Image 1 (cartoon, rainbow, N blue to C red):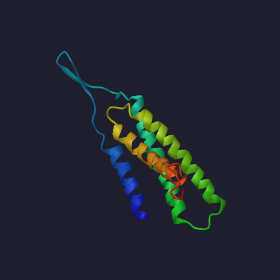
Image 2 (cartoon, one colour; image 1 turned 180 degrees about the horizontal axis):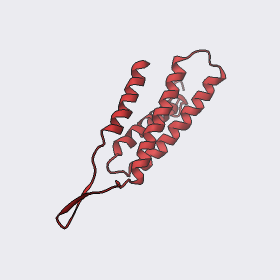
Image 3 (cartoon, helix red, strand yellow; image 1 turned 90 degrees about the vertical axis):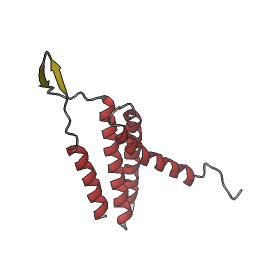
Length: 130
């Protein structure tokens, strides 16, 4: 569990630190640095999707590592399902991003896996005993 948390923190830290590019504009032989980066709505949605998926995975890890939660387990399952749903929705909006599309894919993948698991576990693909 410590390795998973350390990996999650490392990925988030590298993602925040590694983006050091800034735009440079040229006007009549003078070079200036733009003070603000343009941020697209798709970039915000992609980053939000990735964060929400990470929170949902964190709730699942808590659920799997603890025992004897009783009704608390049901609450954690509900929270994880809500965060997976929102991560999936924001991931769809994040696919419009040009530079942060990979974050949208990270947010979409866990939501798709949970949806596939629910489809298989509810028997919507048919009952093999019939």
